Image 1 (tube, rainbow, N blue to C red):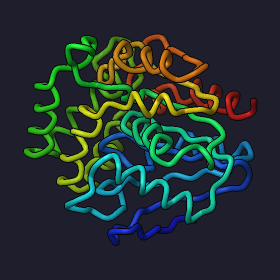
Image 2: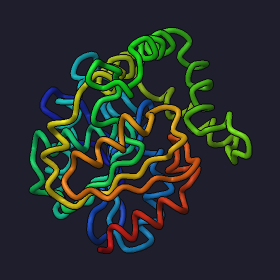
Image 3: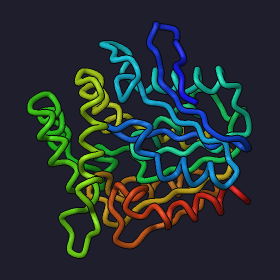
Image 4: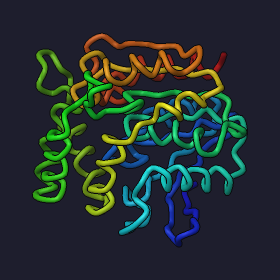
Length: 274
């Protein structure tokens, strides 16, 4: 089953809702869509869970809006989907920008509907390099992403797939299909929303949101993540979230939900069953 939820400003948020059991809700990374979670949705659905994933506004099949492409609205859109489906006791799973969305959802709406949280290659607490965040990424890197997105977006996404999946590393198992899927999902989104979203994953500080996570949390990150460096993200988030469990995948890239799907699926299922 797939459908749309119409939110307050009239935007239509696409979602998938499959299976029965405890709900596992997935929030995708930039510039992708809910299709990025195919390996996890199939696996968890086959193991007795209800699996739900939405396309963030201006991504995938959701409305391409000029305004509202910010984390406050993303979190409110997620809340609207969960409310419309009356989701309870959910396991929220966020990858990359989706990790910021999950954290900000709890920071903004609380954990009444949430049982557990999983952050995978997630951007919190802050990606940007600052005086107080020296392990972060310099602003000019994100300015380059803006230039690529606002220019030859198609070629930029083709090029970005290489570090995303670690295809530039010796012994990688990245396929042309992985690259093609990344490009296709990216090109389905709207350029204005994707451009605006760069600020949300790079310059927004999610520290206070992380402090409000009051349910069991699992943090998964590859130590060869070339997109969201481990030292400025998962390492710090695991220290901010109370009693968070940290799993570091040796040699894994940013797109580990696909390149290391079997390993991640097993860890996700084990965490869900606790």
